[in-house]
Image (cartoon, rainbow, N blue to C red; front, side, top):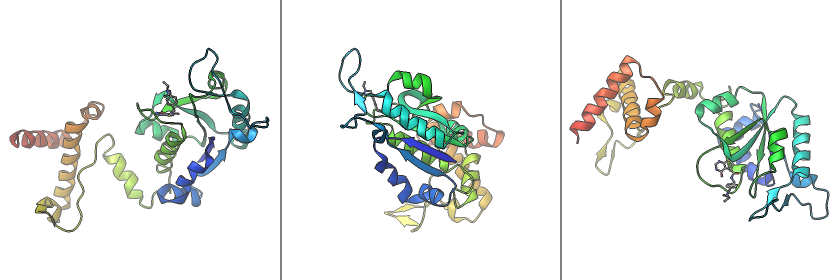
Length: 247
Ligand code: 9D3
């Protein structure tokens, strides 16, 4: 999969290339990253990429000329890619959207700065507009990196363990169960006995019950979007009863 990022801050993307699962996926060719800077396409002596908003008001707007030229070069280099603009006005992304995005052969990601980009660029050049959440950031670069991280780890060959992806889909739409590692006792807090039992069936059931219970407690909105099979419903009922007994 190919990503072409349009950004005034190309150096920020070194964070993706330097460390971790995504860096390895990029190094091994599972995904490709190309970065285009609109400032390189500005023709005036100041290399201007922004201008004052028509109608007045605070802040600046990314102007059409240099940004359009950068998008056009990126699209010529990646003719099969679709174009997404990261913006607070975009559709809120979730894991299902990430999986859909991962089906395409490539994306040109426009990371805006200032108050955003000229609306006519959105009308003429942008296929999709995406937000990563209802909080205010300083630009689209971190959201573009969030999308790349979430999407690239779904690509075949990106994760060392094929297990991880399978496990993810098994508990799709649920929060994770608690995790423990050695030592067995920390400040008097033991590890749940079932995890030391060696009974893999019991451990699997306990983990699923914990995942369901924590989702019920912390993110009931997620549970309402997901149907439960008979075993899951029984494990959740058991968790809820234990929770109520514990007061
Ligand atoms: C304080 C500026 N705001 C005026 C009311 C508007 C505004 C403009 C530009 C708010 C944020 C930004 C920069 N944000 C993004 O480019 C962005 C973003 C975000 O801020 N939150 C969640 N997802 C995204 S995707 C791109």
